[in-house]
Image (tube, rainbow, N blue to C red; front, side):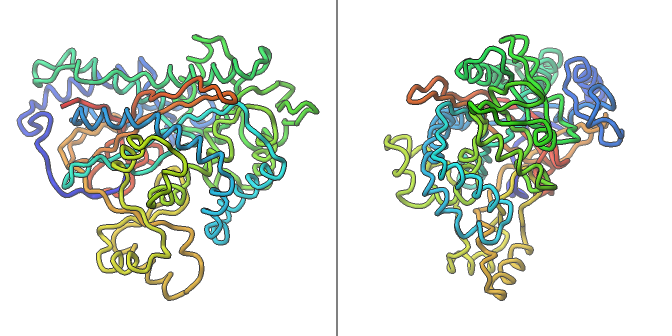
Length: 483
């Protein structure tokens, strides 16, 4: 979520005229609802909260009321989700495109280089992923000046909040059923959100395609995971609806307990693995030693269905996003001209740092650009005067370090007043929002089993903040009120 915003819009309700007593009642009810329904995260102030379930829980940060969002833009974001799913799959099959596009980045970004090395090994082995599973999320902001819905990024690994995003939609529906008449809002204008069940269905169908009833789904997790309940909601749906068991392992545990059997089966602690679902492994900090890299390679060499495979992971990098936005590149992967036009309509301006003209423009007007490294997880981007300073430094140094970054058009979304609730305290602030639309893609050989949009995530953050990750502490969870 990337920007300080420009234009203040008419809010959903009159936040100045709203009765303080009513707000406090709603906050109280929302906190009770969150506790009863599992809208919770680990409390970072409690030592064991990221390790032991049920210890040190606190409600997930949330907006008290949903954010107004135009229905036509929401429909467009849902409509393009299957096209983006197909695009990722096609891009992932073009090993040369991935390697060539990231070749300069590889020289200066150690993390991307290690991922590309694993990808190269798979190409050398001629390793073919017959069963391909992608659980994706495409993030957008609505640009106030152009009224265009512009894509911030496309996530192909560890797309968080499939569980908690559904709960926030339910929370807001519950609050509007009780208080909607006082606020002039209708709970039916909050679109249904069923990501957790749709993702569980995709994992279950991938498990079925693997065709070993004794095998399990393995969730790859960080050693201290304060967002574990979002993950547990998905595993619970998998067990309750499809009777598929999930186990949780860190990369270090997979290195210690994992082995590749002669038939290609991945065995971890004596248990055959059908599907590997990554909720870790997307950042350099997830690989503190060689053990984690060994685990990643071991999993990639196995026959288990990987969500994502190394090629899907690389297809979601910022550099690939920038390459796909170049003229005639989408045509390399997609045949339908209408589909291509829809995707192009969502693309913000994206540039490589070997474009001298754009560099000079960004140095002149750094407020109009965001500088992005090849990283996931929030908190990594460069804004404002720092863009100018970094670009000047790169020009001065004359190294190839510029290949580690891309430049993106800065989006200026609407600012509106909202109530943000964090640690049981509600405060009013001016905020901007970012929409994420989830998608699932499953294919076995030539047969496409699932290609669909699967629900949404709304995140809202104070307009004075540049970054926007909820887990990183910048934003709150929200839902949509269609206008």
